[in-house]
Amino acid sequence: MKQNGLDSTYIRLSYRDNDGDFGSLDSTNVFVYDGRNDSLLITYMIPDLSAGQSGNLQEGELILCVKSPCCFDTTGYTCLSSAAGIENNLQFHINIIDRAGHQSNTIQTESVILECNY
Image 1 (cartoon, helix red, strand yellow):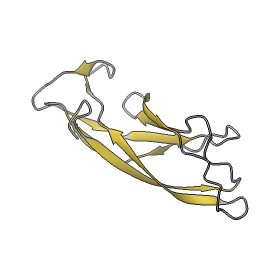
Image 2 (cartoon, helix red, strand yellow):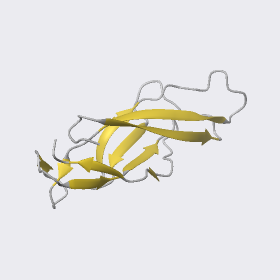
Image 3 (cartoon, one colour):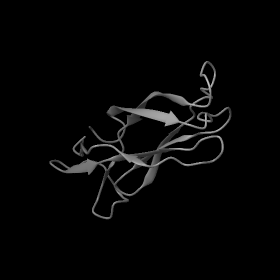
Image 4 (tube, one colour):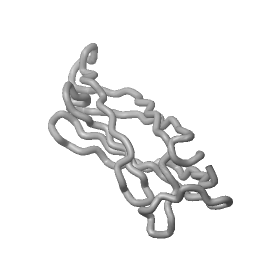
C-alpha cells in the first residue's frame, strides 16, 4: 500500500452474533486500529441487521474499505513525509461492539507492506 491515503485495502470478515443485537441505530460499532501503535484509524456504523433474521442468531459478512495510514519513524508515532526505500509492516486490528456494549474479540489481519516513498 502507498502511504497517506493514496491507497486502500478491503478487509472481509465474517460475524456471528448469538444474541441478535449486532448493529446500531445511532453509534459507531466497528473499530479499525493501526496495529503498529494501536491508534484508531477509522470507525463504521453497521446498522441494525436483525430485520429478516429468524430467532436471535445473526451471521453474515462485512467488507470494510480502509485507506492507508502514514509511515512511522522509529518512535511509532511521527509520520514520515517521504523516505525512499523505507517500508513499514502494517496489520489492522478490528473489533466490534454490540448494542448491549459487549466487545468482540479483536482480530488481526495479515501483514501488508506500507510503502513510504510516496
